Amino acid sequence: MTASAATELPVAKRARGPLVVLGTDVLEPRTWIIAVTLLMGWYSGRLPGVAWGLLASFLCGVVPMLWIKWGQRRGYWGDRHVRRRQDRLIVLPGVIVSVASCITLMLTLDAPRELTAVVMAMLATLIAILAITTAWKVSVHTAVASGAVVLTALAYGPWVLAAYPLVWLVGWSRVAVRDHTLAQVLVGTALGAGLAGAVYSWLS
Image (cartoon, rainbow, N blue to C red; front, side, top):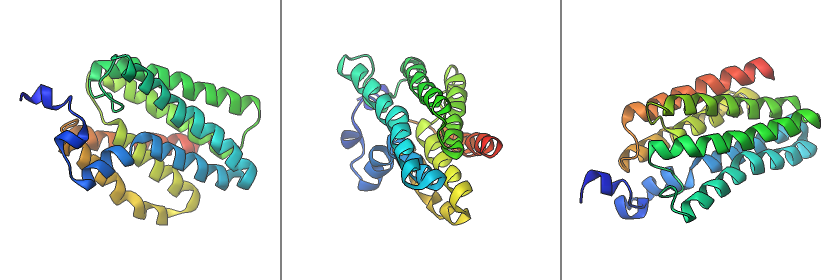
């Protein structure tokens, strides 16, 4: 089997270790997005904030996954991780539209400022990822995971950074399944932490 053919196989076929499955499939971007929007919703407004967090998790986490699954069922891209860089140039703009729609609703309906800042940080990171992806396949998994940990730490305190080994697990798993190089997961990690953290700090 060629290397290119191997990259099209599901994770379960290419690497069966539970840590690989945890890092790539369980701790995928949707998981981090839902977690951070709900946690930041609670931080910004308790129960009413959680309601806003549910909206943000739906538009920023669930709708993008439905968009990816729609394309997957029609054969436009191989699986939910969208391994081919060229396919990501189609997928990412759709995700950006959904996140931008969330921001529009939040600004119009006066959502909590901190949660709105989180979603704006997501949008900025997505735009940067799209720009890089035109030439290089930076890791979305590590960018989202790293950004989520940093955003939560900025709100709840530095103790949240104790969760950072999970980000490294995600990065290791992406290299293990040969979807990314070490450089791609490291750049994704730095991009998610630096850009999302800076945008949130500026706007919140």
